[in-house]
Amino acid sequence: MSGQRIGTVAALALALVGAAACSGGESDWRGEGLKLEGVEDSLTRIDESWRSQLLNGQIKVNLPESAKCFLQVIQERDVTNQVICGPFRRMGSSETTWQQGEITFYGGDASDKGIVAMALDRQGRPKFSDGPANPNARPSRPDGAKADLAAKVDEPEAPHAQPGQNVTASADGVPLQEATVVLPTGRLTLGLGVTGERLGGAEDRVAPPVDGSFVVITGVNISDSSSAKVKVSTGGSEYPVEPTSGSSVLAIPTDGKDARVGFDYEGLTQWFSVATGAREGTAAAGYYDGLEDQASGDCPTVEGKKKRGFQRDFRCQAVVSKTAYLDKPQEQGARETVGWAADGMVFLSADISTNYFSRWYAEDDTFWSASYDQAVQVADLRVRLGDKEFKPKEVFMRTGGWGGDSTTAIFEVPAGSADISIVGNAEVTDTLRSSDSIGSDANAPAKGSATLKIDVPITFARTS
Image 1 (cartoon, rainbow, N blue to C red):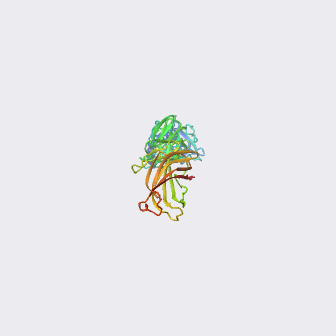
Image 2: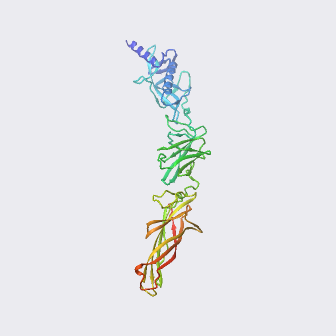
Image 3: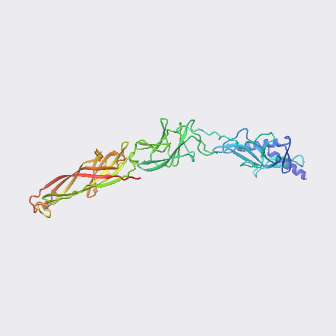
C-alpha cells in the first residue's frame, strides 16, 4: 500500500513538470536524502515552466535564450529546495533580476532514488518569486552550464514617441532646473528638464524619438484657461504643449541642449532655457527688474508769503505703479494703453494728485482781503531719468484723488529704472468769489493765474 501511494505521488509530480523524468541518468546529487535521477530532464521542464510564466505575464520582459534555472548545491552534493532562475529584466526596471523557484523531491524507481519537480501553490501554479541566489550554495546543472549571477540584461525594447508627441508617462527622477515665470495672472515656480532616457513604468514605458529626448515641465497647471499657452522650441521648430493638470512631457527630435520653453500670453512669448532655467531675452522685463511694483513721492511745498497780491499754497503727490502688461480697464473712457510694454521697457502709471489754495492780501494786511475759487490743470508731464526725459503715451483724469480729482499719465521707460522724477507744470487759475467781489481791497483782481512747478522724486525699493 505504501509503495502504491509513493508511485501515485511520483506520477503526479512528473505530470506537473511535463513528462516522466526517467531518462536523464543518475548523479551524485541528493535531495532530502534521495539520490536524484533524471535531473537534466527535470530541469528542462522547470526551465519551460519558468520561461512560460514570465513571457505570458502582464509585464514585458527581456528573457535571453541563455537564461536557465539552476539547482543550488551545498557541499558538492546536497540540493536545496530552491532553484535559482535567470537572468532577465522587466520593462521599467532598472536592474537585472533573478528568481527563486520552490522544488520538491519525489520517490523514484527505487526507495533511495528521487526526482526533482516544481512545488505548486493551491491553484496548481509553480512558485516563483524574485530573490537572490543562496550565498552558501553553488548554482549547478548536469550539462555544466554556468550561472553568471553578475550578468547584466538590457531593458526590453519600448515604443518610441514621435517628435511633438505629448506623453503621459511619469518623469520622476529627471533632474530639473528651477525657473520663475511671471505672467499677468501670477507668478509660477517651475521645474524644467530634459532627458534622453525612457520614461514611465512597466505599463506605460516609452522611449524618446530616435536621436531625440523628452522635455519635462513641472509646477504649472497648463489646463487653466487663464494661463499662458506653453510651447517648446528646439532645432528651429516649435511644438505645442497640450493642456494638462500635472507635469507635462513633450517628445522632441533633438538632444534638447538648445531646448527652450515658451509661455505665450496675449501675443508675447517669454522664453526659458531648459538646460539652465534662465530667462532668455528682454520680453516682459518689468517683471524681473528686482524692484517693487509701486512707489510714491511728494512735490516740494510752495508756501504762500504775506505780501500784497496773491498768496498761493501748493502741494502735490505722485503715486507711480509699474508693470510690464496693462490689461483692459474696467471703466470705459479711461486708459487706452493696453497690452505689453516693448522689450526691455516697462509701463509707469503716474497718478498725480494736487492740493492748491489761494487768497489775496492787501498791502500790510494780516488777513486776506478776498477769497477765490481755484482750478488746477496739470500739464507738460514727463519722466526724468538721468539726463533723459520721456513723454507720456497718454494723459487722462481720474476722480476722487487726494484733494479731489487726479491726473494720470502713462509712460514707457527702460525696465530697472529705480530712481526717476515726475516733472511738469501745474497751471493754476483763481476766480474771485461773487460774495467777495466787493471786499476790503477794491483792487483785488477778478481772476489770477500762475504756473507752478511739479518735480516729484520717486525711488522704487529693491525686492531683494
